[in-house]
Structures are given as structure tokens and as C-alpha cells.
Image (cartoon, rainbow, N blue to C red):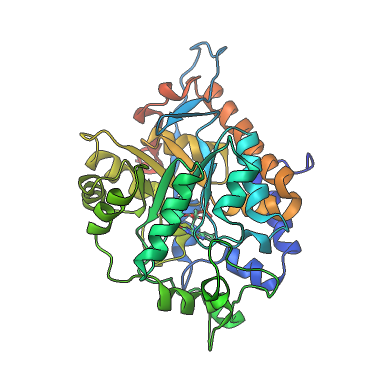
Length: 366
Ligand code: FNR
């Protein structure tokens, strides 16, 4: 794995290894993929303003997230169906996160079950990403199983009344390969994803089964069935962040679902300051995912107020290339890049990274 020294290299290699259906499913964004590109470009429009000669001997990336200590502020976002990337799928990804002492988030529509992950990484910090099904018993069952299995939080995805239009999946008539199933379910819910009549099998699955009528009241319902903290995943507006907190969420994950839902929405790093500002008077944590591929991206998100940053696709690229070892390689590339950034910027600990460390490029072109 040592020959890969950037996340970009992992991505380029993984894309040559994956079968077309999985490759396109993993990499695509919604419609014209403008936001997909912006998620990355917006990071490049920010400049880091280093402080000189501050003494950086004691560099430390450790932080606490929802009360748990992690070795660095970089964790794994939920991505569906990871056994298309590697036979050990989510298990390898979770093992990598646990080995690196950080958070792994399991998707509802994973190809490894809640219980398999718990058995593979009993000590690892695990979060469960929740989609709410029309059948509330199905949803409740998922939440109770995650709580019983030792997961530490529920990341409720709030940006998905239906799945975005991903043209490659429509063209490929995306479907889960025959040898795989959605492991959190029995019976038809585990295989129905293969039943597409036309276009993407995933979109048809979501359309048939997910509850489109959801409102913030569902957070209250969730809180009535679980003691786990709830993270609102997919918020892009300050007023929505406030609604999430008022409904009882403990944290906000600023996310545009990897630019897979609605094209034309802001890059997540652009949306972050509005949300940090909107919830600053509450005692909640704010995280970010979307387009993070370098340690300096992570640094910029921390400077703008994120407590933790998550990556989705980079873990898939590592997984494709080397299973657990590939994901660990990806995490260690980001860890090293972030360590360098902290020291050279003159902010040796996470707490030192204040808002003034980053400025928009436009400030330099006047
Ligand atoms: C996702 N994402 C996602 N989110 C979620 O809440 N539940 C899910 O099942 C999935 N599945 C999924 C599959 C794939 C292939 C991708 C790329 C993304 C969104 C994910 O959690 C996260 O928000 C993004 O992946 C972050 O962007 P990057 O890091 O991929 O750029």
C-alpha cells in the first residue's frame, strides 16, 4: 500500500479495478455533477494563513466527538453496498477505522449487517446511518438492533426523500450483484433492489420503500424509541440546523450526500459557516463531509468550525485496492497530511485551529 501517497492516486487506481456498475455507482453525482466538482473546488478557494515561530513540538490530532475520544478528526461516512468494492466490504472498512481509532458509520443499505460489524469491531466506535422506511416497525427494529449492538449514535439522513438522479446508474440499470444482499434485512427487503423495471434499481427501491412524508417530527419519534444521540446528516441551511437542534438532534453533519442528491446545491465547505453560526448558541457539534481528499481540506473545515470531518468515497477507493489495509492507508495519508498542516500552520493542536487561520481567496485578489 506504501506506493500510494495521495488519496487521488488511490482513486485513480480504484477506478481502473472496479466493474463498471459499481465504479459508476460509487463515483457519480447528481445530474450534471456541478456540485460534485464544486465540493472539491471550493476547498481550493480557501487559503490557510500560517503563523510563524510558535513552537510546534507537541502536535496532537486527538479530539472528542459526542463524548468519545478519536485519534484524529477524520472518520468514515456511510456508503451503501461496500461488498461491491471488496469481498469483506463494510467489515474491512470498520476494522480499518477501529485500528486507526476513529469512527465508522454503517449504512442502512449495507451489505454487512449491524451484528456482523459489532462482532468484527466490538471496541470500535460505530455509528449507524438511518433511512426511515414507510414501515415504521422496520425502522424501529434497525434502531433497536444498532443500540443493542453497541453503536454509539444514529446518523439520520435528512436529505433523501427520494434518491437523486444519477445518470450513470440509470444508463447502467444499476442493480446489486446477484451474490450480494442488503444484509440488515430479511426476505424481500434484502433483495428487492434487484427488481428494477427500468432505470436505476436503487431509485426504484427507495421510491417504493422510504418514507417521503418525513418531517422533523420524526426526530421526536426517534428520540422516543432510543437513547442514542441523533445526528442530522445532510443539512445545508442554518435554519434547518436550528430545526434539527430544536427537534432534539445532538449534532449536525453538513453534507450534500457526496453531491448525489440535488445538483446546484452549495459545496459543503461553503455551507459550513452558515450552519456553525446558526447553532453557536446551542450545545451541539457540527461535522462536515463531501469532497475531502487532502489533509489541508480537513484543516480548512476545522478552521471554519467543524468538529469532525468524514470521508465517503476515499474509503471506497482504499477498500477496492486493499480491503482493510487500503482503508488504513487512506486514513494514514490524511492523518500525515493533517499533521503536517497543523505544524507548518503553527497550530499544533486541534484547539489552536481558529477561524482566522483560513481566508477566502477573494481577499487576496483585491
Ligand atoms: C453515499 N452516501 C450515503 N449517505 C447515507 O446517508 N446513506 C448511504 O447509504 C449512502 N450511500 C452512499 C453511497 C456512495 C457510493 C456514496 C459516494 C455516498 C453519502 C455519504 O455518506 C457521504 O455524505 C459522502 O460520500 C461524502 O462525500 P465524499 O467523501 O464521498 O466526497
